[in-house]
Image (cartoon, rainbow, N blue to C red):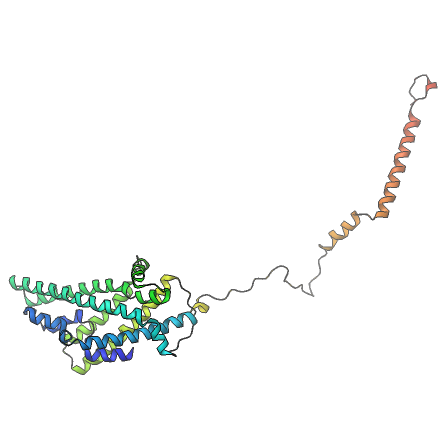
Length: 325
């Protein structure tokens, strides 16, 4: 990302959608041609800086996004085989950057129309210059917020395409479904708004060219790195994909649970005979076959003796039918 940021800070100005307000120099009532020149800058006359910056941005983002994806999948972060990493994601990112660049141009035309409308109304109503400049600044900030809101789903087209293998149409539709109700743009809007505020302050202070280039390089570098990393982290989090770089540290390893059979008895502890006594009682209750046979013989002899005693107690026929007591 250092190469694209270094080229961009010399060929363009970051966050010009907001920082163009400083170029009015407290004189908002300008002609339409001067307003157009301020908002579009030299890039409208010389298209090659835009193309150079866009190509470098695509290559840098492709390398960074592929490296982050490999880091999340394997847990290893390295830039080895850079050409292979760029080849994995360069096509999806190129499509996304091309569409976002076209949209940015259309967005500047819309913003140019709104600023011109404010100028016409302010001039007709004899509005003070400070009030007109404040209204133009509010319009620029509001359009910037809406721009970030619309671009947020576009940042996820590339990860959906090269991770899931979707085509462009399917990835565009899936991105809106994926981000529905997630408020992802808040994480992008606050850092980008801070960077835009820094760039706007540098413009109002009319800093030297070297300071503007240095600030532009830092702002470009931070924006490129932050947007790429935030997109990948948010995509993995929303999609529920496993991350090998944080999975071993996300939760402590579970301790092995002790099972009852795995516990070793203590040699010093007294041995309980609760498990042995039932076995011995069972052995006593279950007699051996010889003992069973003797028991049956004893039972049979006792039955015969009982039968003999009963017969002796019965009255005989010679007793005259009287019961013997």
